[in-house]
Length: 235
Image (cartoon, rainbow, N blue to C red; front, side, top):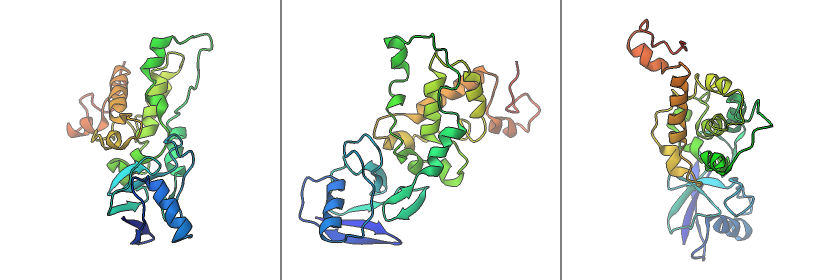
């Protein structure tokens, strides 16, 4: 089986005598027996930590779960700093969680969630922060200030949590470089290993934003402004 791995500027082809193997197993075999300088990330080996996310044939996957096919081309995630080979620096993408205030900011300790409450954002809670959605996002590719998929999914998770007392602040935070900048292309959903649809979460956040009096600033600009579509809340 032949596999090509991007190292610096070129793809290097390796041949391994393995079948029905995960990409992580192939990478370990190459590093152990052929090229000990090969760099890649791994952690849990169980599709939980997200650290082994890479791109195979131009699509984001988890190396620990992807089964390699002959001729596959492997490269690091896009839209992030490459440290070496398949190892990338996720700090900038992860910082979007802080900018989006993606946590329970002010919560009512007396509020008890029932099973139905928990189901509202159970799927969003499965996010493993692997960065696949940021790699696939065409908006983040051209605007690094965009809050991005998993950050906005996180905001929806807490905005929809009935314990949160200051959901309005979170809605305000995502008006710039946030919900209105997304093109709703759905690329993030297609590559999420957990099956989370950030597109759907962003659509729900847009609805919440509209209910709070916000509107798409781009829509206002298309009318030249001055018609009440200036992106500011009106109560």
